[in-house]
Length: 535
Image (cartoon, rainbow, N blue to C red; front, side, top):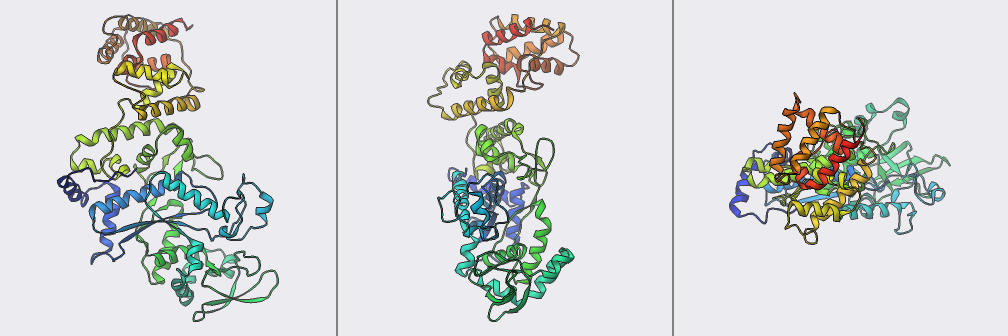
């Protein structure tokens, strides 16, 4: 999705860079916070962005949202500070213990025998990778690669076992009491009595154990605990992957160990961000910049839940639209709760196309506030000549006859259109056909016209039979005139009637353009069918 600024002349890039320092688009506001983070100069390693992922399930639309939005901030920062290197870490928490077996996986009974073990130690039920986490991590990387994200993948298991976290793990032991004092007030009485930042791994079963710590030795980097089954007293090193941290402390430790400068989080993690930020300071580090984004809602306004399965999957979106249109939708108002369901797709696609169309005629300030700029990290491509909403209405009246039928309508609108060469349009037509078949056809119901509407449709039919029946502007002008002649006090009622009678919906396209693109013969066929319907 990232095309960059390479196609622009240096003077245009300089103008964009100057505007970026004051532009109020949210990615630039976030980028300026990163600039302010280092008033005396950036570290030699540059600025580190991070997104986190739990590999107990497959990547989903929330994964895409977090990486896409973080990338938008990263690109905004790079425009402002082109000489500062940046990295985006995609971090997998694959050392977490498997708390339950996700439904739908093969070999359920075998997986239950591994409950409590790190996800990186659970066998892959699909038999393709060395562990369940490795399988899902591979899916994550393939997912991110599919959309062209630039990232560095890190595994919690690898970081623990390689010693990459050891220095900060020692610090947790050294500052144990301060860390515990931050966490305890957030726990209930029973949990508070047994809480410890470290979770040792059982040397026999490999399970991650939540047990009280009876003693600790910061110099030796060990903790002493009693096995919950045998009662045996054991000493375990907290280094090298023999133990892991509780996740809120783990998050803070990771920020410090990896030098993370920026990470977003959902609203449900607001309290955790505050707590982990305090712990990061105790550990001698600095919590990252970042903002809290709102969670998505389903079409009823309820929060989307993986458990309830009331959300929209990334694959469902891609069945009907491009990843660029999804990124454009995700750019808008990240701090506001927004609905995310199939019904938003057509408008999101056309909003993205309209943003691409605006770019060439916008001034510098407007360009940097244009969602398409943030989707592509630079100038967006030209949009297709036909809006997605219009294609949906075309397939609604063409039926499921295939792209070649819609192609003929497009060719009538633009005789130079060649479906064999314009693959983007052909793909869009296919997506429109799929959306209509899956999401519209079963709900569309055309109604019969009343007496006044029938008279108006008869007038329209006569106009379409004449010499001006092919011209979109002439048709649109005549539609207004017909509405006034037939006594529609509010012309919106007349256009809504057209949508309901001809398309089976309460809303629709600009009718002059639609009827011209459809062609007078097919448009008159629709009118004839409507006039034959009993009122």
